[in-house]
Image 1 (cartoon, rainbow, N blue to C red):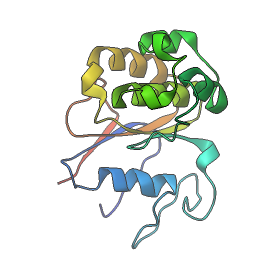
Image 2: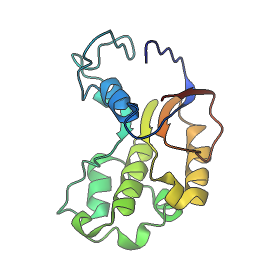
Image 3: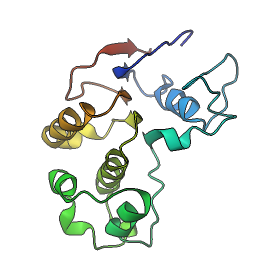
Image 4: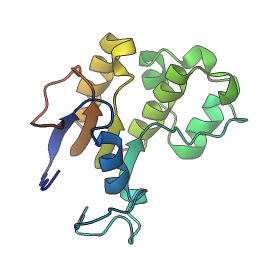
Length: 169
């Protein structure tokens, strides 16, 4: 990607495996240093200046504490939201240690935690969303209205209409 300018709303970046979607999110989150060019998020270099408190991020890795329960992880990282846990259909597993969760359950928990933190900007890796498309539509439509900006990466279709869309090859 040579140029990317995003002022707000919901942006979707689509592309096949290996097209750079996850790398792009990692660079925007300050987790990966770009090999060339300049990146600015909130007028800061995300790799040098700490923007992590300003953004919500759900990527390939969930960064959850494996030995804590889902509920304890949610309380540690965010403000527990029973309604959101019910919509995500994870209320019944929250007392179990996260190490017993499936990949999809970990992603659902991570998305619930991040949305409950009420950030102004979110980065979502959405390749698992088709596994629970109906619920993801409810979660995204209800919560993205409250969020100023979100960048979502996906292989294919997502359950909402974006304001801006980029396709990577």
